Image 1 (tube, rainbow, N blue to C red):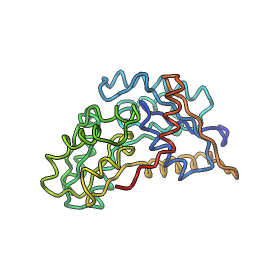
Image 2: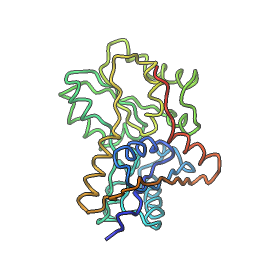
Image 3: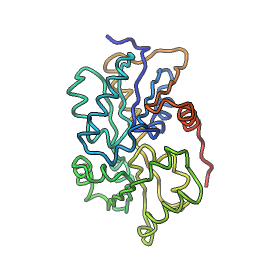
Image 4: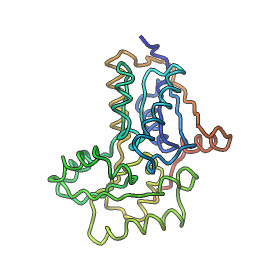
Length: 262
């Protein structure tokens, strides 16, 4: 059996999964975490599913070689393309993926208009289309492909006229009729929550899936008796395929980032 003190590995195509990592730490503060961002190959949303699967397998192998006891794929694109292959390759490993939080949005806003922001690959994936179809009768779900949006986070641009101009161009056509919720379908997007709020106004609820991911990880660790009992809080370490001091500094800054309340 794996050591309960071994780290939970968290993997993303770049820096966006740090938004998930933050929720994991809030929910399971006793765990140790090892975060790997594959910024060298970002964005995944412009690659083929086969390319994403291969990169995901490489990342998983790297993290497991460092003793990880569980794997959180904190990337919707990688989850859609690679989760089945990862689970087949590592059948005994607790692997938790992500998906756009359409279910909670539809349940909290029945009959409402819901915008779902995601990468072009996520919007086109069959898995997303199946998920959307499950809730089409409960709410009007409007997917919006936001190619290029995650790159702002990768560059540390989380507010200001450039990112807000991008969001205005993308969202303004849908705001002529009131909307009830905005689903953040990429783990990079929660870092842009403040900028998105300034565009959509105060009314719509902005929803991401981080809390659900954290609860699922908790269940999987409990099932395998791998929860770290503490009593000390765990530690967090960061790695990136762009092994540069500036990148590691940006990762730390995002982990500690608090957006202003618009």
